[in-house]
Image 1 (cartoon, rainbow, N blue to C red):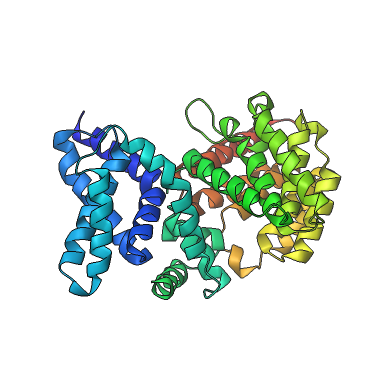
Image 2: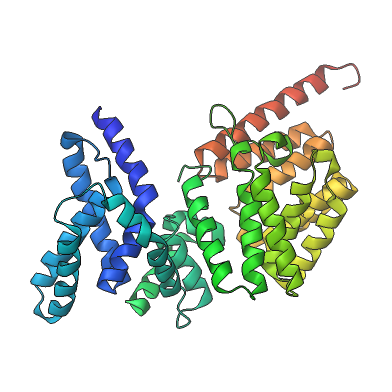
Length: 394
């Protein structure tokens, strides 16, 4: 394996194991900030050793072992933490000083409890709601500060400050992250079992199940993004869809049909029930987005509502709503605003204007896959504009 291949393998392992590693370390140290530092130390050790020794079969367990040993060294140097040192030392001694074939099983057995414990720590009521979300996305989702900032539509330093404050209080280029989706689904299902009478938990699980059902269809043969209306719906996972619809029905039975997650799940269900794009109940989706916009006002919700309106009542109706969002400060750097506008302009046979919007969308996004998709759409708009100019009626 070449050095570049080794580094790529290490990067993949870190993406997959980061949340598990931090969760397990947080349980042993009772300190989220320290757990993250220890995890980073283990990654550095991997970068130093794996290029020569190769990536171990039990890579996650290897990282955990190294991190625990670093923790022991740290506690040895700090007499005030002697009790924690003894606790971790006994745990490591029981597990053995070397990574054993059984380590994978032990690691997997504890993972759900550790991750849930980290979820509850990151979502402690003492923190502001926005800080809870930011910290959870950072620790469990493995998202970078920049990625979280884009999701929030706020400057990156703002998110960085929230994460730092949250840690003190509690003492990419990927188009999709399937492993992260799987972790979220597993944790959501566990929470639904623990809080069986909480409607919004079932609404959240319904939303995740249905969204995850489309994972296989969201990328093409070369890994390129495939938009919703262009996806091969035969590739949608019907088992996940059925689970999602059942969870949505449970949320509605509990009186939670108007909850934010249940409403989003109901929108996703409209797509899931349509075997062909033209069968989609866009009028119903428009109604659901209107309710969601009243419940949780957001420019992103309004942008999605504009798309639904365009599908139900025509491109011009949708464009009017999009243009009304043009002055919204939080959307000035949001690449999906010009992307949606470009799509509507194409439907209205205004390719010159659409090209400019797609080019703007490509310039705004930091995701390589999305950038190429927008650039490709800009080229298609340019070609259509050229054909229009060359035609006798042009």
